[in-house]
Amino acid sequence: MGGGLSASFTRLRALPLALALGTASGALLLGLGGRLAMRLFALATGRPGAFSLRGTLNVVFAGAVAGLIGGALLWAVERWLPRRPLPRGLAFGLLCFAIASPGIRPPQFLTFGLFAPFFVGYGLVVASAWARVARQEPKP
Image (cartoon, rainbow, N blue to C red; front, side):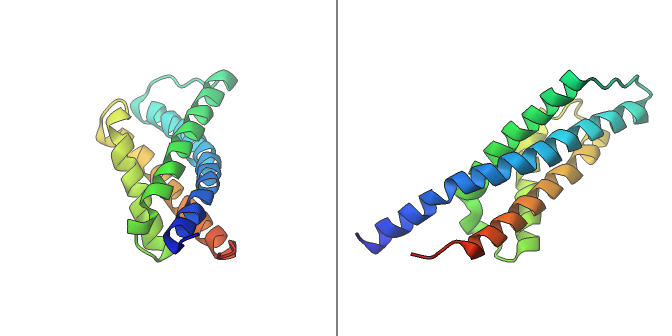
């Protein structure tokens, strides 16, 4: 087996790990964090806020799905991100926020300001976890 092919298989083996890290982190930070951002938006704008278990589970599930996509994105772009974990996490979180920001409603500075920290946190957690796990993976 050639060196390039072996490296490709090693890289492909990392995809499930990236998806799992992204999904778990997405459920927590994008899902629960998104739910908190929605509540803060309701408080800041004087709107009635209502929590329901069903609504919360929907948002957490959406966060997990977004995290899954983010895990795939990390796997795809990680070679172009900075090497050090902090700049890597910040860059990745901001990239995710930039991709997701057209879907944030209503498009106001307040909503962007409430959601942005959760995307940056997501990027930091996923990049940090990725760096830790990547160090422990056996090299071929």
